[in-house]
Image (cartoon, rainbow, N blue to C red; front, side):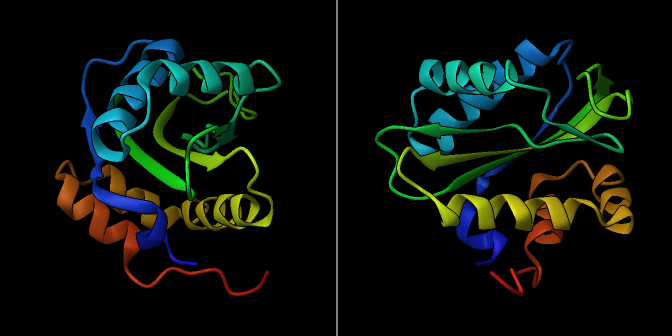
Length: 154
C-alpha cells in the first residue's frame, strides 16, 4: 500500500483559520465531502465519536484522527497543515499543526490498520514533517507525502 492509493491531490489543504479541534474536524469533513464524496456531517460525527475514546494526537505536532464510515468502499485520507497549531490534547501535550485523517469502510479490517501504520510511520519522520511545515502549497505537500512511501510488511 502506498499513500498515493489513499490520498488524492485534492484532499490536501493548508488551513489558516482553525481555532479548535472541533473546527478542524468540521474543515476535514468539508474537505472529505469535496475530495472524496463523503457526507460532511457523518464524517465529523464519526471523528468526534472516535476522539471521545481517546485523543488521536500522537505527538510532535501530529494528529491522526480516524474513523470508520458506512458507504465507503476503500480507505481514504485527508491531509491538512495548520498555519497556527491548536490544542489537541496530544499525548505529549504539544499543539498540533499536522493532521492526517483516515476514513475506512465499516467492515475494513487489516486494510485500515495497514493504512494507519503507513501514515503513522510516514509522519514519524521528523525531516519530512519539517519539509511539510516549510511548504504552504498543497501540490508540494502532496508530492512530499507520496514520493515512494509504502508499507514494507503486513
